[in-house]
Length: 293
Picture 1 (spheres, rainbow, N blue to C red):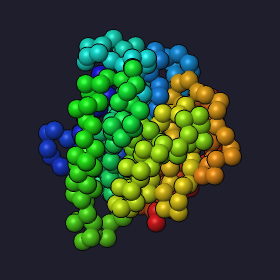
Picture 2 (spheres, helix red, strand yellow; picture 1 turned 120 degrees about the vertical axis):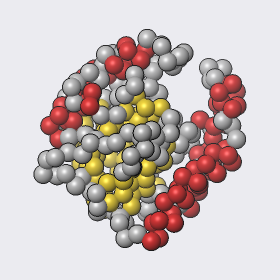
Picture 3 (cartoon, rainbow, N blue to C red; picture 1 turned 45 degrees about the vertical axis):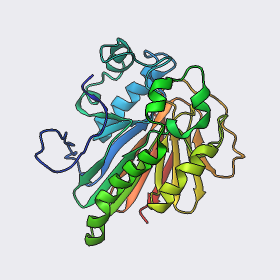
């Protein structure tokens, strides 16, 4: 379970004993940062979870992975009760057991930033639950936990602090910087859940203000690429196990989608983000290249 990182982690070039460090590929494409984004997965290997995990292992073994990011809903149906909960073994350790996956960290919920060779990456992991009004009256929500985090102004202040950590140095540096945000809930979606007006009202202005142009989420059980406005590239990767065949290709912001269990494989360099939508059989259904602006 130590491999599954939950909390605030700083991934930087330092000797701080509390930091964990990325091991970069020694292959010819070593200037790429390579990682997987997947979500909505923890079902004890069922509903194609094991098949997706097998393909994740294949991709990491053959193409390289520095880490994996989970977009949430990690343990169905009611989550885990403690650090000793058997679901950690049943839905995580026993499923993501490929040798190549044993060598990388899995990041979920809160994080900080990454430094790499000739470019930098700042990852911002958001807790989107407190922004969604209906959860405060939902019968299955953990009310105690939700009310402890309901001060969205405090969370915004915390996020501003994390963004501003790089702001001063960024003005002095000519090293390219990617700002990537991750949260469980999407702002926009072509699936049944639809667009989330609470996040659009409270969190989207934060992304605009801080010029964050890449957002990854889960929640909807499919993989989607949406372009709500010129500078935001919005991805949903929530097909880590079960999928819902509910994507409407009439959504005005939808560019590409996959309605099969799978994940997004990403290669990042100083000037381009390359994304592949991969299904449970390992087949790439969509390829996207986004230049850094």
